[in-house]
Image 1: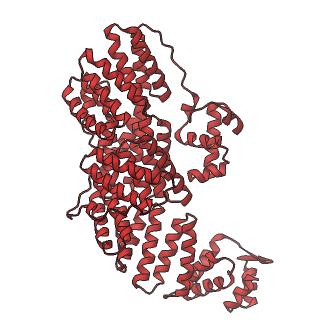
Image 2: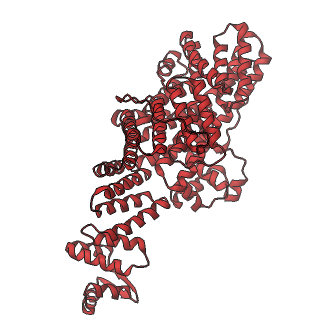
Image 3: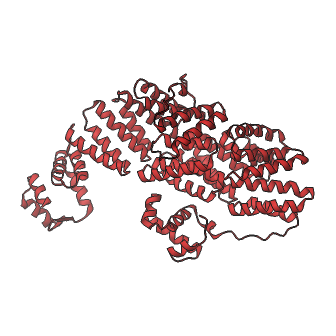
Length: 628
């Protein structure tokens, strides 16, 4: 029926259809039309004039009344001038696509709708929406081009502020933190006389960037742009204000004020899901800045779940790589490697090679922590990326992770290790690597360097009151103290570790305490700590540290039998992810949807899991005692 309707609209007689059938180019069976070869359609389409093509699309649109998506696109292809009816149809396509997480489709629909809009503010708004969808779909170059096109038509202050904010986000993620920060300040200035809630969000965002070292020639203090909200203001508004103050305090290294403000923001948002696309990730950043590991893990897991559900690939990558920071800190190294491995192809798909630097650096660090041989290959790749491409806001973090990794690789050569470790600049990474620097500084006879880092840590620990920070401070004091005082500091460090999820640091303190006690002829006491250290290192998969603990334990007079590594450690990060989800009862299809891969890829990884773990079914895999 559709074919008949369509041919009538095109004024094509039945004899024309007969001639085409007789030529063998197509075959009609009932309502179905099949072509001799897929290229026939392309050849016919290319041979037609533009007017003929538009007529064909118009005819198809007329008969596709039951398929609004395809109908809208045929209408768009048939249009050669602004058409409000077609634009409305494309708007509907874009809105439905965005709602189901199809951001690339939404960007395409809004971009075409803008082309068919007669210029002005309405055209600019559609281009802005197209740019925003392209960004969510992890297409930063496309988003940047669309945003630049929108800038010529967008004059409405709230929309222009949002457009500038989007351009700033693209800029600081793909090119320059400084330029991105400046765009956010411009956005806040544009919005200053209008939407107070938008100004508050932008000011909070600017303060967050300033906490990471962003600077601008504009003499604008983000914390001065917003007045304190009323006590009865919505929780998310008061939380944004608390984050704003906290980020400002971090920029001043006022850790007590930062911790107080961030904890206020957490308390306002802990009991309800946060769906604000600016507030939620910045809560995670706040947790990172004050080493709140448990909350950071929880926030980034929530962010990852929400981003997967929305199909926001850029936020999936953000949640994976930022969540990996806390997984590294707490010793969940297989999870960190899995997150980085999942993020890597997402960053590759953006077309901006610089975005691949962070997950690659995280893979290098985890490999070094575990003593794996692939570390150097990852390090070489990070160096190549940074030499050839702008990295954006994560460049400082990538550099710090690289220095830490190189320091770990040179652990047996204290001078070389210190050369790399003392180049770490970011406070969060300096805290993570502190025990490595202390160890190398003492063995390399550089106590002054250890004291410098210790003073910084003491300020942070005093301000935040975190057990993890207190434990590292006491560990450092023990290494620098006289023999008679060291034991008390080690004991205080272990007491603080009991309240911290940072298992790698706990293992390091037990090892250092044992190494302190053994030369003092307190071998029985030393063995207790060395056994604990060895068990923790083996559980973490920290090969080189486990060997060091085993060597010390043997030196204390105790024989050490090498413990078999759990078979789960043989799985790749992708196989671990698949196995973990299958063990939760998910089908291959559901696992594929979670990981944004094909069902065939899931099946491939699952078969590898079966082979490595010696099982033959999902039930057997679920029954295994594995820590994934």
